[in-house]
Amino acid sequence: MQVPTHDARGVAVLAGLGGWLPPRVVDNDELSARLDTSDEWIRTRTGIGRRHVVGPGMSTVDMAVEAGRRALQSAGSADIDAVVLATATPDQICPASAPQVASRLGLGPVAAFDVNAVCSGFVYALATAAGLIAGGVSRRVLLVGADAFTTLLNPDDRATVPIFGDGAGAVVLRAGDPDEPGALGPFDLHSDGELSDLLVVPAGGSRMKTSQNPADSYFSMQGPAVFRHATARMAESSRAVLKQVGWTVGDVDRLIGHQANIRILHATAKQLGLPADSLVVNIERTGNTSAASIPLAMVDGVNDGTLQSGDRVLVTAFGAGLTWGSTVLRWPGVTPA
Image (cartoon, rainbow, N blue to C red):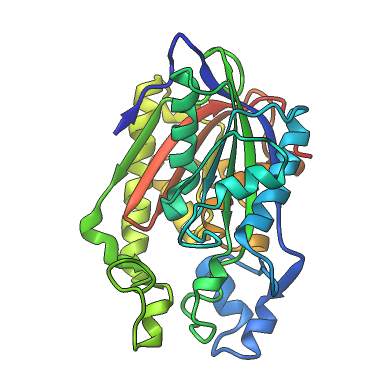
């Protein structure tokens, strides 16, 4: 599905940026002490050296509030019409978590809802927020990607525990002009539900609320198949969105992909014909933070100087569902709080 954003009422423009990670850090040596793995094995296969993990009593909403507050500070205004929360780990199955985020940030009775496209969630939520602005429903939207994904993992599973971390990243979007820096779009979004079993938590929903088998309550993935689909789909979607906007691959200065695995990022860049140094990467110190990974990479990219004002940026993601999607923007002079 292609989502038009260049409406006469305004396009979504990136105006604020913030991120937050839980204080507890788990490095590879700590995992190696209790799992059949090693720092070298994890780094070689994933590029990850450490990850942040929620502590007792900490939730997705807690992280989202911290990241959202920083994005509002970055934007210089808490004048917000809607809150969109991209997450696969809401605080409860019901109700949605976004209204709690809005309330705790003191934003008043604004529209607030969750979007669940797992690791593609931030890109899907960007398109959703851009649609609110293009349709004249909202002038300014706070979009937060937040996941406490470690709460879905079997603590003894060496295939998944080393990969994931927890965190939150947020952006403020405002109505603006399609020619100004920070203007988002077009978007390219897709899904394939026939492959939903490649990444799944079987229990917890209406089909299987509980299960006699403890494994049904944990996240599982078919790694090799996920690798193949992730690289192919992100490259395919990236080409489609570049064609829509009229850019060639050579026009792209930076590629911000979902931080799933360093090999997936490098393989996607290679399929597109982009050099490895065009990638914005922070997975070594965060792990895969699901819907939070792209905005957290944006924060780190600005802070370490990788992202510069005027850079032509390609954003792409792939996640469970299966879902995938891409968008583009010219990087604005936004500073994370």
